[in-house]
Image (cartoon, rainbow, N blue to C red; front, side):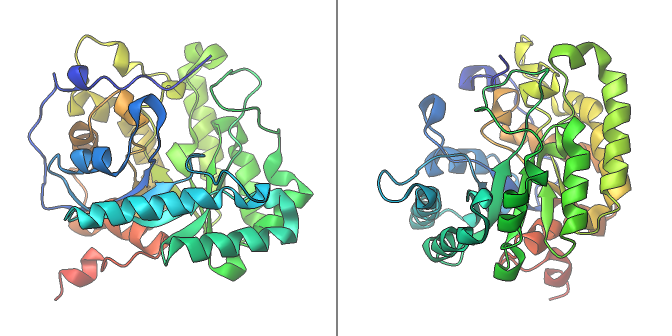
Length: 344
């Protein structure tokens, strides 16, 4: 079974780097707060935010934590939004300069069809102006056994799911998709059916590198890029550039005696990230941390240094889009886009 690597703070501390381009504004559009493996809450997130990168805001993304312990089953996931708001207020009260959980992405069972409206409205109310959208996991592959609960095949094509999905856009909500690279065409079909709904694909579509895929990295990359090229034809789809430190991708940095340096990460990740930027453009791409999941293989400081190394030859406008402005626009966040802020 493939599981997330255990976070080992003592091991991560063996790799220290100076912060590259410390004045570059960043929005981290994908992290989780939860109680697993000792807990990753506002305090732990703020410790990582204090690494030295200029992170102005973050987005908490659905992770099945904080659900209500009572009440109708459909409404219990609203507890995660309530939990994320508490984390945001805790960070604010502590004097944190980053807008923690400026956006919140929660869970709603879209297979409820039109009845999901009640759940979505409850999330919006609980979010106190922070709720931005829904994530519904569909990451599954018959050749890979993961820590994830059993997920239905071809969920994105399910008629009831699509009835519920149709309720997002009228409420101004977006959709986060997490799936594996053989499923990217299913997301393309969904995006074509709902061209006015904003969709973001998490973790670059997770090109698998485990199980039977481990010995076929070149073939996987070719299939992944072909599917991503087709997906890029849907203008309502954006991409999160990250998640490559998940064990599912197969790089195994966590098995080295020392944590990877940002140069090593940049070298390994560059083909995936540069291909996405080429296909989707900087205005539909946003870097993400995927912490604390990716923290099993690298520190927050090293992760963002790697992204900055990959974009070293980009223009300032391109960097601003990738690190900040695309996320601010997609999640309708309050921070002023960097292009406008620099003119004032």
